[in-house]
Structure formats: structure tokens, C-alpha cells
Length: 142
Ligand code: GDP
Image 1 (cartoon, rainbow, N blue to C red):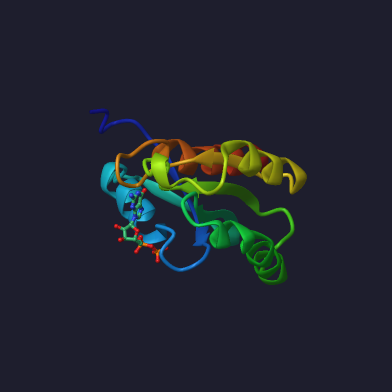
Image 2: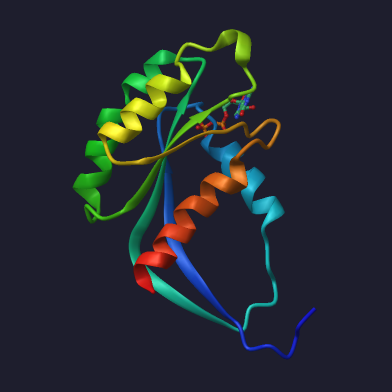
């Protein structure tokens, strides 16, 4: 690996919010385990929350109904420009689905959020979800 190369790392603060048991801890664990880079040269930190993943469980409608409340909570504690993605987690639970992909997309469009369905269980879209947020923050800053 390129030890000589001068690279810079960026440190962004991203929060995961949503009802209890939607899978926030497991999404973070899945992402962190696969994406750890120990050889950073310098780190550029950005103050405050700049990214957010708002998570619901596609197999429990009440967690989807809570999204509006979580958005209010987020906006009352951070800049309105916080890069936010709506996440429908547990996409592996196909037979237990209570919230359609179309509904998730529609809410995301109405609220001007990115959208993705993920599974922390089988890894589907977990990296992609975090990367969507990180890339957008990077684009805004550069
Ligand atoms: P948190 O309270 O939002 O942090 O939720 P957890 O990460 O603790 O997950 C709550 C429960 O849902 C645990 O039993 C997890 O094993 C389970 N879980 C989390 N993500 C998934 C997923 O993508 N698919 C399935 N089937 N179960 C999940």
C-alpha cells in the first residue's frame, strides 16, 4: 500500500436516529467492521453534526410513522443543511414487510432526503447508505 503518499482523512460527525430496535447499532457495527483505515496521515475535522441517517424498520409501520418526529428532533438540534438519508432497514424481512419501498421513497422525496433500504443482517446497501451521506458532505465542502 502507498505509505509514501500524503493523504488526508476527513472526520465527519454523523448521527443515527430512529425508534428503538430499528437496527441502528447493527448498521453501525456492520459498516465500521468493514471500513476501518488505520494508516491516516492527517485528519480534517468538521464541527457539529453534518450527516444523519434516520432509520425505520420496514417490518414495523409505527417506526415509519415516527420519522416526522425524528426529523423535527434533528432540525431542532442541528443546521438545516445536515445531509440526511432515510433508511428502511431490515429489507431481508420480506414476508413481514409493512412499509412499501414506494412509500419510503415518497416520504424521502417530500422531505428532500436521500433514500435507501438496507439490511444489517445480510449487508445489503449498508456501505452504500453511509457512502451516500459521506460523499454528499464531501461535495458540499469541496
Ligand atoms: P437499535 O435499537 O436501533 O440500535 O437496534 P439494534 O441494532 O439493537 O437491533 C434491534 C434488533 O433488530 C436486534 O435483534 C437485531 O439483531 C435486529 N436487526 C437489526 N438489523 C436487522 C436487519 O437488517 N435485519 C433483521 N432481520 N434484523 C435486524
